[in-house]
Length: 77
Image 1 (cartoon, rainbow, N blue to C red):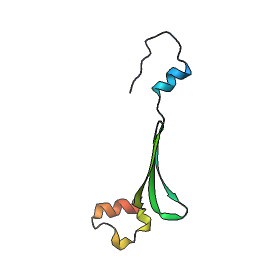
Image 2: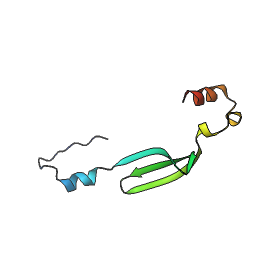
Image 3: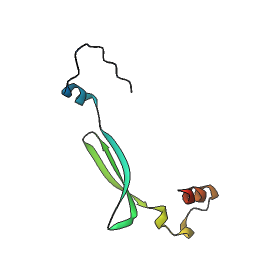
Image 4: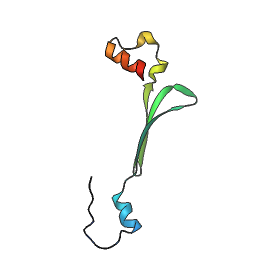
C-alpha cells in the first residue's frame, strides 16, 4: 500500500492513528501442553487465538506423511 500526503498540513497523532493498523501473527505453545501448536493473530483491535494441532516433532515418525518430499521438509525444519 502506498500513501501519498497531498496536503501541506502536518500529520497529527489522530490522523496517523486512523491510517495505521498494527498487525502481528505467530505460533506458540503453552507450558502445560508443549506438544500442541496454536496461532495468535492481531489486526488493529481484533485478536484471535486458535489451536492448529500438534508440532510435527511431537508426532511419531511412523505417522508422518509417506511422500518423500514432505518427509524431507519435516526433517529439515
